[in-house]
Image (cartoon, rainbow, N blue to C red):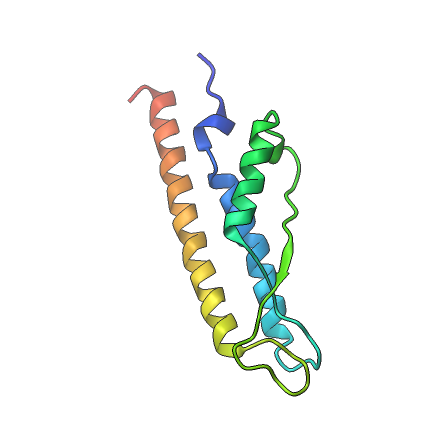
Length: 123
């Protein structure tokens, strides 16, 4: 009996791809903390997962092509005079939270793969 890896792994590969792309966006924000008129960006996890679900309904195309998520502008709590909306503490906290979520997703994916390995070996 064949194993459908796309079905077996579920949303975890898409979640890892999202977390990777979000880390790049947050790193860009951190790198431009002192750039005048730079606008902080972010990606909505909820919207990204809705997009993945919609794509998955369309014959699992979500795993066949790379996802591109809509970049949103982050509203600053204290706007800077130079027009930069990056707040160092906020970006560092978001980056750390994203890194922890990435690690969690990696752990879930490893558990899924371990279970599949046991199933293949007949354990």
